[in-house]
Length: 151
Image (tube, helix red, strand yellow):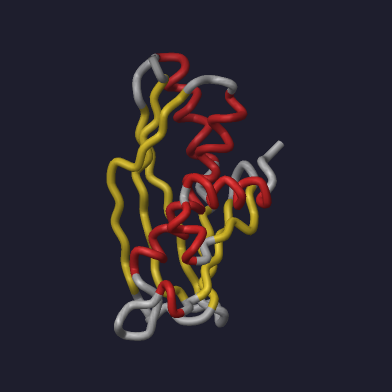
């Protein structure tokens, strides 16, 4: 069973306060997909009156990382996680409510299982796509996650 989004949003208040104050919220979480939103406002804008790229990055990373956290918790093992690399593409100004969706949850279980079986760290890439209220892609982020057993 997936962690509730309300509990996860409370977690962000205490553990990721800059994301919380900028308005990043987890809206949906299951084993295969996570959805986050963030709305453009004064506190998260750049000088060009659109959303600062780093705020988009926080929302995009949360849509990938929430699934990693949840599946690690479900494994019952002590496993560390870290973003090793990332890249992004910005295709339109981010204004209004931006919704980031990641549908790469299927990649996580395999990596967790391999790290448990072999004791070696595993790497995998996850993509999150941000769209505006009209469904137009404003940014695409890719994150290379690493997982390994804690010693």
